[in-house]
Every structure is written in structure tokens, then in C-alpha cells.
Image 1 (cartoon, rainbow, N blue to C red):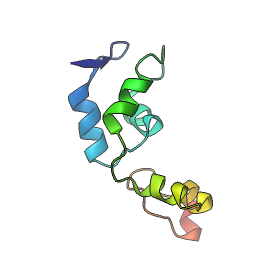
Image 2 (image 1 turned 180 degrees about the vertical axis):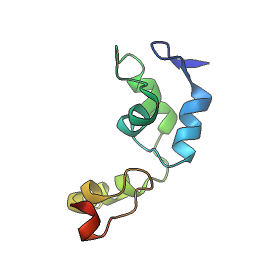
Image 3 (image 1 turned 180 degrees about the horizontal axis):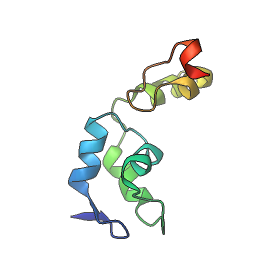
Length: 85
């Protein structure tokens, strides 16, 4: 089933991107463009992503916003200080 009709992105594609490490709608958008045109699919994408394990989200929930912002967008793992610059 299509999630984003603007760019033809399916539920399966969103789930595949999530399995590859994208855990926010913004990360899904960066790899697929879904949610970047009309935006009507963003809530559906959020629903598909759910509250599963996400290293960046876990850092934010634990109050470590600096580490979450410095985390690698692909894996969610914290970057070394020299990599974040």
C-alpha cells in the first residue's frame, strides 16, 4: 500500500528504510523524499515507525540531546568528536 502518493513510496519501502536504521520521519524523508511535498503522509510514517528501538530516540528520551544531535544519521550511533565537526 502506498504511504506517500507524491513520490510513490510504499509501506514496504518505509519498513525497509526503518530496518536499515532510519527511525524518524525526517530520516525516512532523507532517503526517500516521502513527506517532503504535501506532508500528508508524515503521520502514517510515524505510525509505521512506531516506538521501536531507535538509538537516537533513546538518547533524546534519556536527556542526552547533544549526543543525539551528534549521532550518525545512518546508524544512530554516537560519532566521535572529530567526526561530528
